[in-house]
Image (cartoon, rainbow, N blue to C red; front, side, top):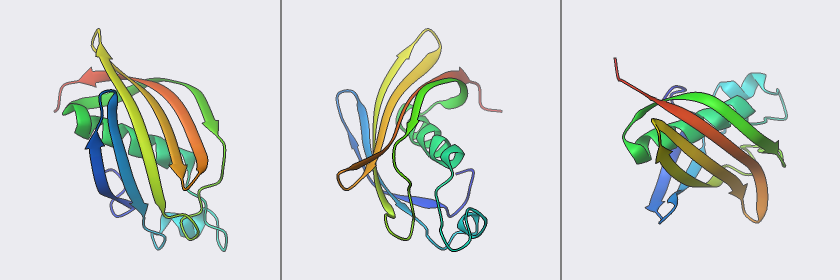
Length: 124
């Protein structure tokens, strides 16, 4: 985990397309003190990192983000109000790449949609 203590994975379920993960955000993490004081918001780059880490766990491969497209932040993720997220990741591996289609939500609210391609890299 790149940002230690930011979130914990509560549950993962393998689906025919990829995985369904339930993640709990740590509302007391230092990142939220600066982003933003008094009104914490989950940084988009941190959400992309979580998606990458969940994909690495699912594929058991070390990945490097090469392309992200159709990134749509549709709702603010406030860790004090909505700390529990559900992420669906449709994962396909082809030609040395892992392609992911993600939808992140809390309750009935879709917060993020993303398509990304990751290059498979050797662990060093």
